[in-house]
View: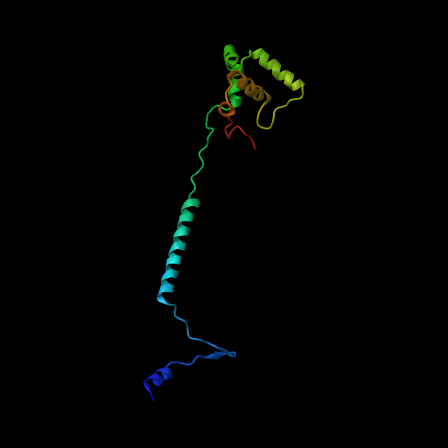
Length: 149
């Protein structure tokens, strides 16, 4: 018996199950194993980058944080010094109240979050100051505590 035949005899024959031949496991070449490891490392790295980018989003910072809401400011104008409402809105207190009553007679009503007085004040303040909507919005902001849901 030759040396090669004795080596072949030492190897177990593939076993058969249900008529199928079971082949010995195939060994991948070292280069393929290295490529697969690199792909695995890159996939892990991409997973960690995605977790870092999307999992730890900073908490939003509230923008409108003034202690005085627009409605409170209008109330302050109506109950404060008489010249203050004239300076800020361009009308006397009596004229402002008359305009509110006229708007109500025309069928205008307070909305869910903005009173009719505040709506009129927003209009008058915009006309008097000529400010942009962003600046007027800063004056007439609503804190979350003043909006009822």
